[in-house]
Length: 141
Image 1 (cartoon, rainbow, N blue to C red):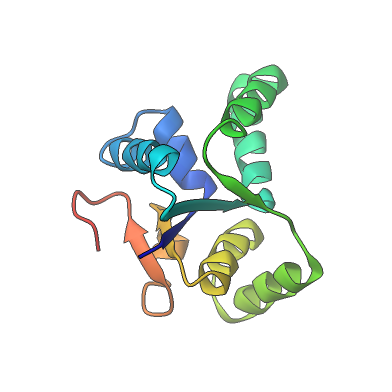
Image 2: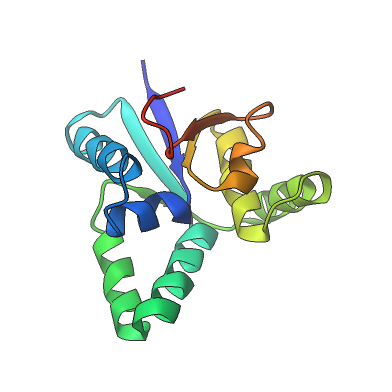
């Protein structure tokens, strides 16, 4: 049975900063995805852009570019911001209190009926509407 996970910027920042328990969980899923075709990891390009600006703000553009290059080597499918995805994210933002970038992660979770991996409180608040795995906790939900 195939399982699909959506990663948001929070999940990859936690991995980069080695914040546990999130980093361990994300690292384990990346390792599993390298050998298990039934495990799919997805991320919106909008969320990758968010990661780029966060790393760039903290460590400079060169580090941000290198981080994105490293992420592109992972077994992670990047989702284009198509017109359908843009409006799906906009509809979620209309209804829920969340950033526009976070709305892309939530919309991807809906589109692919996937589990969203995050520690972002704005997204965790959507747990009644989406499958969310709270990476701030030691247990999977």
